[in-house]
Length: 88
Image 1 (cartoon, one colour):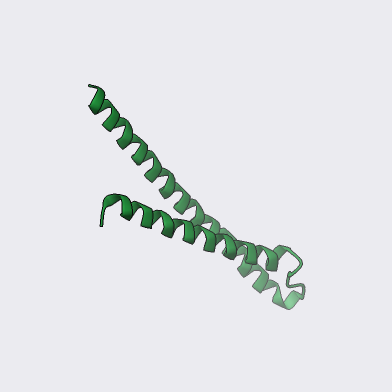
Image 2: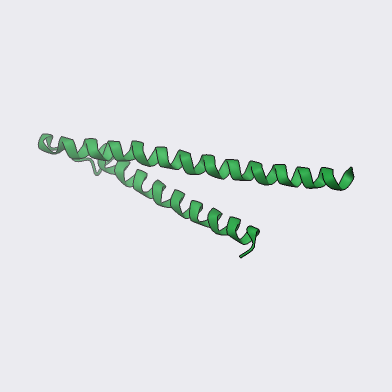
C-alpha cells in the first residue's frame, strides 16, 4: 500500500470518527439541554452523564482535528521541501 493511499485511508477514518463524535455530542446535547431533556429530579444524574459525555467527545474531537492539522502541515512542509530541492 502506498504512502498516499495510507494517508487517504487515515483521513477517511478520521472523518468518520469526527462524524460519529458529532452525532454523539448532538444526541447528548439534545438529551441534556434540549427538548429531549430528562426533567424528573431523580433522573438528574442521567443528565449529568450526558453532559460529561459531551465534554469527553469534544476532547476526542479536538485531538482528531489536531492530528489532522499536524498531518496537513507535514504534507505542506514536504511539498515545500520538494519544491526547494528542485529549484536549488
